[in-house]
Image 1 (tube, rainbow, N blue to C red):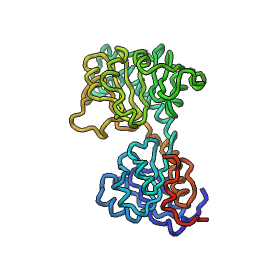
Image 2: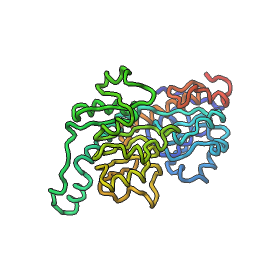
Image 3: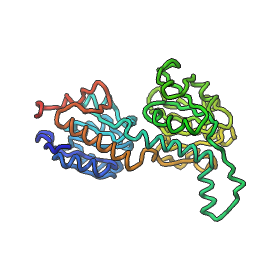
Image 4: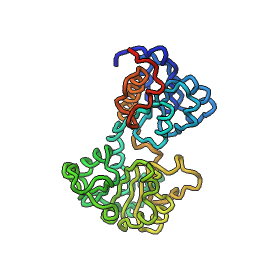
Length: 342
């Protein structure tokens, strides 16, 4: 990207408060931004509050909550860059009220997450965590680790967006059939035929699936969607893979269904509380694979995301419309813009 200095009225620091690829930091610095990069700032509110009054840009991941309180402490803030696609930690209405544009990177980690979902399915089918633990301990009770093949299985995808569209081509050669439920798109949507999958009503999808992959974002309409009743309607012996947002699933109900044997297993990379507290209902269950929100953490995905967000942060600071605004219409930044900059 060409090095064009940020106009002086916008030259306050860009605060990067969570982990960010070095290449993204370099993009900001080479364009003339002063960057304060400390991946621990999200856990150090006192220091963050000392930096915010002067900041014109803020870059976060999913730990720091961007709400009215934070924005009140940042009167010069023009843009928030979200390193990823999820927006549940960003209050879009508050950003609009404060004249702050939010940019993000939808699809930047879609391939990484799709590959991780496949890895989760294989880990459940072949009992890989238990096998690895046994191998590390020196035990060799192979007969206790009888697994399953993916061939012939039915995979339901709940939340077929960019990640789901990247996942389907990976699944098609390995499984028997793939189906989805989408609340705003019916069975006649041409994309299902293009992807080689079917649309099913939600309850039918749950009863049909050997594996249910949950990729839903966390919104008012999805929070707690998979409650005890819906989870109980899953096919007996089914396995659940959750790689969207954890608050979609009732974890206590899931734990009960796993203990009872109604469900054969579950893999969760996202949790309702991250990290989970000491009363985690899923911890210690033998048929659960728990990972710490790492599905999108590949070198390649993080480089794509960092580059996209850094370049959009610069666009907003220069008075240009962002390429990936998180909330439409993308007019929030106009309230704190000065005269157009050349």
